[in-house]
Amino acid sequence: MAATEKSIEERIDRLHADGIVDLHFDMPMDLYEKRNRSNVLTTDFLPELEAGNIGVLGAAIYIEDRYLPEMGLRVALDQISRLYAEVEGAGRFAICKNYEDILDARKARRIALLITMEGVEPLGTDRDLLRSFYELGVRAIGLTHARRNAAGAGGVFAPSGSARDGLTAFGRDLVRECEALGVIVDLAHISPAGFEDILAITTKPPIVSHTNARKYYDIERNITDEQIKMIGERRGVIGVNAVLVSPKKEESTLDRYVDHIEHIRNLIGVDGVAVGFDFFEFIYRQWRESARKELAAKFTTPHFIPDLTNHSHARNLTRRLIERGFSDMEIEKILFRNWMRIFRELL
Ligand SMILES: [Zn+2]
Image (cartoon, rainbow, N blue to C red; front, side):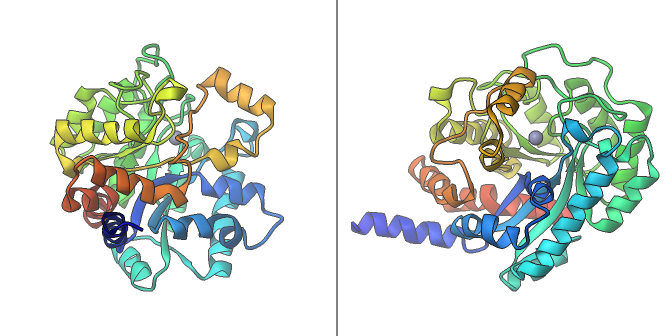
């Protein structure tokens, strides 16, 4: 290895020493689908997480359409059960409910899991269930995925056409209750009208766990420069998504991913940008052709970045950030410090 290459690899080691924080990963639904197996965390997930030095992971409960409405609550509870059982068996993970838990997990060299919820379908229209999920460890909630539910509607995968009516009374109620309980309200996926409603209600720094800049992928599921600035003004943080960096396959590259980071940094400063990779190629590859076609028809065809497809590729991102001139302090904030500040302030 050439001397400069060696020094870059050592620099990456140093930058990864505290562990990367990725705030969006669809792991619980996969654990649920594999519920007849044991040690799924250790065999299917741990090797890639370790290769990428992942320290904290947002584990998102998500309910697929085929379980709704009747099975939504049940599948959500089962996903959490699987997560607890797997964590107990694996020994290398810890489910964390507050900032101190995360620090303790990292000190013990465990991967800290923060349970999140993508779409409140499991709650139905019952606000009291929010408290139950809180007690089970859910610490961040995005009200919607792309579909409409009792709380509101998601942003469409098109430049316009999302529902204009914002949050429902139930949705507004949930946002208030989340803030009161200490659950982070996640603005990922929410429609533009819902986005404004949430910011009007909340007082704490807002987060968008996994999204992209509409400058490079102009759909209402992503966020405009104006929305990015609204997050920045409130000292919030935006996690950059690795599966919607461009509508074009040939432009879905690591450099385009860094373009999103750079764009957000240029608009609101480096304190407002982090990662929410949303690596779901491992799920996509398990799907039959018919399920993939359904996804393409309903939303879009995801373009996975060849050298940023899963957690084991995290070093490629850090290397590219170095090559693109990001300072060590900036890289640490993007990979680790910004989300940790949010946990410290909000949990
Ligand atoms: Zn999502």
